Length: 407
Image (cartoon, one colour):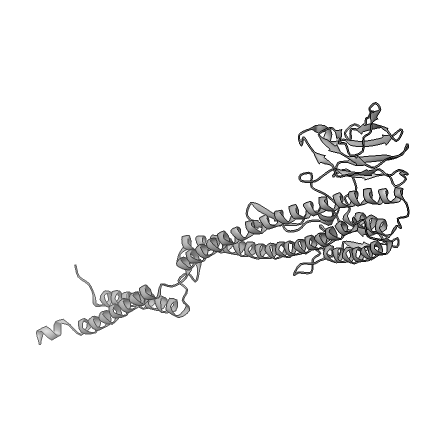
């Protein structure tokens, strides 16, 4: 096979041009640190890089969402802890209010302290997170949820929503609670039925706390009214909340301090009620659950002077009612705080998983698009030496001709 001089020169120049182009490509990669500058460099790798970039962007958003969620949950957790502390202080004052040695002035002082604690509780109910969103306003997070109207009553202007944020592809986490669920509700579990005496009672009967004897008795959900037909007899009216049907039992003999059975519960009435006096036992979730309204009623009770045996009895019964309502609210707050703590732990666990996935995705993307300096420098040096050798060989071979042999 014969190769002409023109072919020889063309082949060598083309080969050295290819080597020079490869050398330039390697130099560009070393200079930029990027091995995948255009899709044409590696079409399959470019498609994978696009997918990994999308994944990285999504993970970055989830990381931001998780941080925001955790910040809100931590703010709520801290606030609920403060709420519980205020409620504990109120609980202590209610216990003091039951001291029979206190006079009207002493009880008025306790009412003043309770008014201050109620204001503290309202301030906490209007707490905000780091972003300035109200913690207990539901979806109305930009508006203050609690305020006092012209009558002095605390009103709620938020909604019943429970804000949440997406923290993974398939999971949302609740980031807040509305005020209704915290300050205007009680848990169905761990609460006690609320005993109460009519404020118009004229006897000295005082109702005690309700004892739960059989938690599974379905009639515990009924409302009971004890109506005294005389100082020694009473009847029990039982109302089913599902149907509204009221059943009135026959007369029963009354004995002060003896337990009165009400379904799976029991209650005692001490003292001596008069004919026409009445008492009630209401399931925790069916009575007044608004902590601010209950505190206002408690303050009114403490501010009302005691002047006789009947007013003393009514006062003691009212304290029992307020104490039960307060303890139900405290149970609700503790339950809510536990739920918030559980969501905090969940988000923190998801942060760890997301961080691991982000690092892996970044590593995979870097493997596709970033230059392996050691490997590329080796390739560059090899190509450079090969090009130099080709150039030197071409210089020597191109000077060889038939005339040199003939001469």
